[in-house]
Image: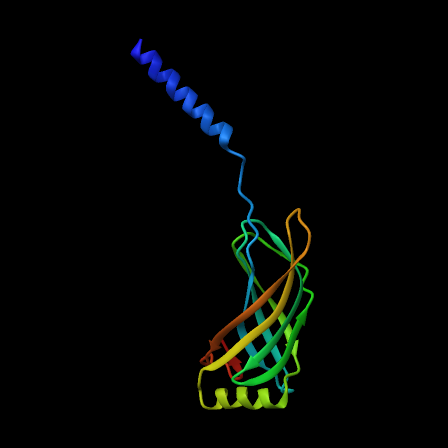
Length: 158
């Protein structure tokens, strides 16, 4: 009798756990943006490898990026792109953005490259993204970090 009671209790507990399961929890978290690489081209303009990080538990399509870039204490310009890429949950991807920087920012980057120093940068602006099966949202981005000279790659900071 005790054996049947234990089996019935295990079956009931298992059924209760299955009934409580609503599937995968879908959370939308603020994405992040950072510079993965800054390359100074021969014409003095820059190609920026912008890393977009999706911290949500579901895929999001990144529709629009508008981020003001500062290097050192100088405004460099605005990184604008319409990538239209889908990034899976808790994943990241990199897009290439061309930028015609301000003359002050060119000098700051040239000085960092010539003296092999760390370059501090900041990003501030918005990223518009559409979570899977939801409507588009605009996220405010504000981040600061640094880039270092990439050994053996002239004009490249990572």
